Amino acid sequence: MAGRFISFEGIDGAGKTTHVAALAQHLQQAGQHVVTTREPGGTALAEQLRSALLQLPMDALTESLLVFAARRDHLRAVIEPALSQGNTVLCDRFSDATFAYQGAGRGFDLQVLATLEQWVHPALQPDLTLWFDIDPAAAAIRRAAARQPDRFEQQDTAFFTRVRAGYQTRMAAAPARFVRIDSTQPREAVWLAVLAALQARGWLL
Image 1 (cartoon, rainbow, N blue to C red):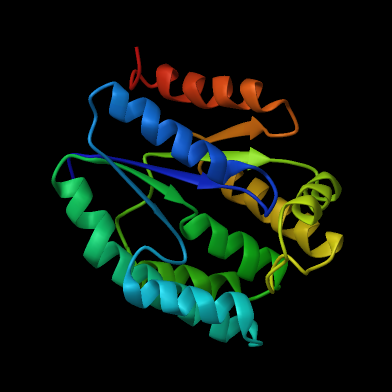
Image 2 (tube, rainbow, N blue to C red; image 1 turned 180 degrees about the vertical axis):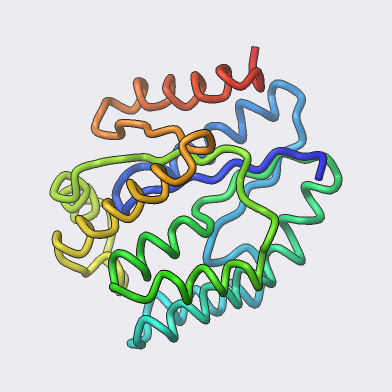
């Protein structure tokens, strides 16, 4: 595929979503064609599945199946067509989140997740993953000040500590793809780190 695929990862409250919009605007001003999207979500079907995931009680297997069902539709309808047209795709979470949240956070079988990943997107991973890393206690303070919590955001600090460890494991397995960004820094410093990650790959002047 000709386009670039950049994913934004991190626990709830890490601040990644703010920088998806900022980077999209920056790249568009530089003349790039940009598609911004999110997971779960990005299509009518996937957004309905997202709503169920964030609100309705279910076990980790059901969560995982719904996440990958949403991802399949998202890939088919949005991500793969955009990449084939040479666009830059900025995605707020992708498959790493499933391994971090359902795998590490919920304690679900990582091999089952790996099998589902192979079924849904055997050859596609982001070209770059920006991991917005933050201490779970600090993220909890941010979440409390920002919004009413959904089903995941209601989890305790121990859950998000496991999720953070899951991201660390994913980064260790694919260090060339990941860039860790310390999102405890002021917003401007985080933004500069985002730009530096793209500049290091020659994607920005």
